[in-house]
Each structure stands twice: as structure tokens, then as C-alpha cells.
Image (cartoon, rainbow, N blue to C red; front, side, top):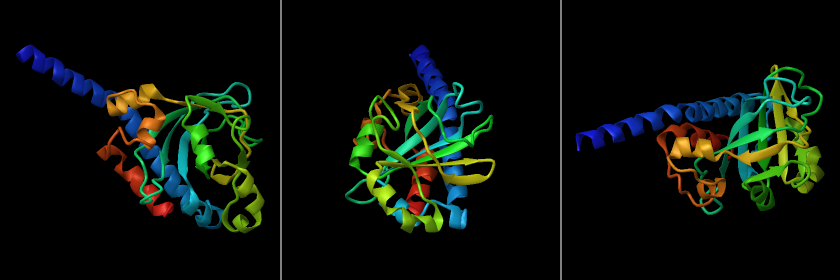
Length: 222
């Protein structure tokens, strides 16, 4: 019995240690969202945030030449509940390949994807899909540009934004492949859930370490 308890304790400790990277990823995503939404006229327009069906944030993406081959980026995604407006627990994603306009070079980039409709969500929760090829992606308008970008908003399933060296703007993002990160989901939730099981079915529950992320979404995407 004692040996069994020791094994259980070690398993819990291991799970806690492994999930620390995922908790850090969530906290970094919260910080990115807070800083970008505090950018005044250069923030994501409130009108777009209010209509968002889902929001994905990839903090410190691509510490290297993205166009040449790119580093692997990690992010989180939550989906809005249509009935009560609350936000799901985060599912973990990875992103590789593709290109993000001309601003990259060798710098770290924060990337935000605003999913505008159900079709965009369906694409994003797949096992993997390529931005631009399988889903309509457009550079999102910022600040007062929102009113002049109605056509873009209507055509695109996903609006993309990035920040590099303090500069924040809507950005062209094509060819990047987004995959669900079931290894990270397993470390964080204890089960290798698929993205849809977390954001649609709520199988991950409401972990306390994700509370600040959901609170940030509730604040900025009312």
C-alpha cells in the first residue's frame, strides 16, 4: 500500500512539473493580450474582439528566420460559448513553416489569431491545417482602421496580428501549419485530449492555472 501511495505521489509531482511549461505558455499569452489591448489606437479593435468566435495567441513565436525554415511556435486557443458568452479552457497548439510578411528577420514575434466564424473554428480545431490554403486568413485592421476594413472582415475566416520589437499590426500570414498539441494537452490536463474535446466539449474542466487567461478574454472580448 505504501509503495502504491509513493507511486501516485510521484506521478502527481511529475505531472505538475511537466505542466509548468504549459502554465508558463498560458501566462505569456495573457501578457501578450494585455499589452496589445493596451496599445490604444493600435490595439485590436473592440468591435472585432466582441464578435470573436475564438482567439489563439502564440507568444514569442519563431526565434529565428521564419522564412528560411522557422522555429516551432507554441500557443493556446479558447472558444467562446455561443449561449452564455463564456470562454473555454485553453487547448494547446503548435505552428510551423509559412511566412509572416517582411518584418520577421531573426526576432521573436507574438502572434494573435482572431477566429471570426464557425468555419474558421472548424479549421483551427482540426488535427492540422494550413493557413491560407484551407482557411481564409487576412491581416486584421487595428484601431480606427476597423471601419474601413469591412470587406476584409467579411471575407476572412481568421484575422491575423503580430508584434515584433514593439510594433503591432495586422499581418499577412500564409502557408503556416497549425497542429493540435496533444502532448501539451496531456501534460496539462492529464489526458491527451483533442482540441475540440477541450474547447467544445469542456472535457478539460476549468483548471485554476488557466483562470487568468479566461478572465483576460472575458475582459477584452466582452
